[in-house]
Image (cartoon, rainbow, N blue to C red; front, side):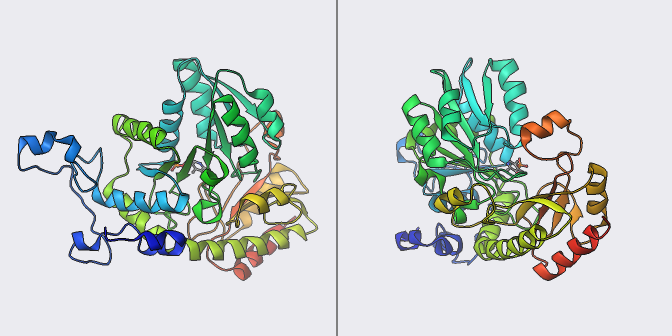
Length: 394
Ligand SMILES: *Cc1c(COP(=O)(O)O)cnc(C)c1O
């Protein structure tokens, strides 16, 4: 790679040009998909001379691949980390982080609104196989984490904003408390992406992303990332990625590189549309509550302004009515398609608590009929018209 350090100051230059090694592939403007499972050596010594292996020595695809490397260099630069590693999914990244940082018999503090499958991993596998216990907190106040810390706490799991009720945590405050107690802070930064939030700068130790959302951006790829600030921690995570075998494939890495190039411009549009939809919903007489951190009415708006540079396309709202009424509204929507996931070009809608008990809903601080929407790239006018016709059924 020729000297590209001047690109590091700009997320736009990182996404478009940083990490690209044109001279290694005939100056093609887009890197090839290195669809090889292994690389060969001239001599046996050449293979075993680990000291002379550099960035351009590749050996086996479960360890590293040139297309994956370009993607990782970009993500490390965007998140201001010592390094980034790409995974086959967000959950491959998340489970590698938990199993690297936590030891048998350890303790985790996790926000209640964290991604469901990660909570299942903690409450199931980590507890049953490794005796790891988890304390859940709402996470609105730093004191909740301080009170939950034990001398055995190894990991604090944040997701800010969270992806259903859009709650935030004070990343700097929690990281300071964690440091004093010797615990590592992990944060799922999928909602903001590195364009709108850089948690490592605020003191977090590990940033996780699912690339299946905005980084891919086109609903055609599953992938994930871990980015760490500390070199030694990064090396441990990387060693376990190799052992657990969760590296992203080269085709997926190539799609993620393509997604990253346009992410910043896509996000600006997602944000503009979501803000317009949030304001529309907030003014609607049938809507009881709107959860979007970009709204000044969000209870953590001041914290949002301190630690984020923007918001993206995801929001949720509750209506005056039953869960059945909410389902009716959702099923009347035409442009918003019913489905999980988000972050792509298309608008989506989901009733994430529809099958939860009232107690579980209370814990998660969202109605059984809470409606989550992802505002895609169809434009605010069409999407608000769709919301209008669906809500008129009430
Ligand atoms: C989708 C999602 C994940 C899981 O990512 P996968 O790529 O599906 O494994 C994790 N966290 C959040 C916030 C998500 O939305």
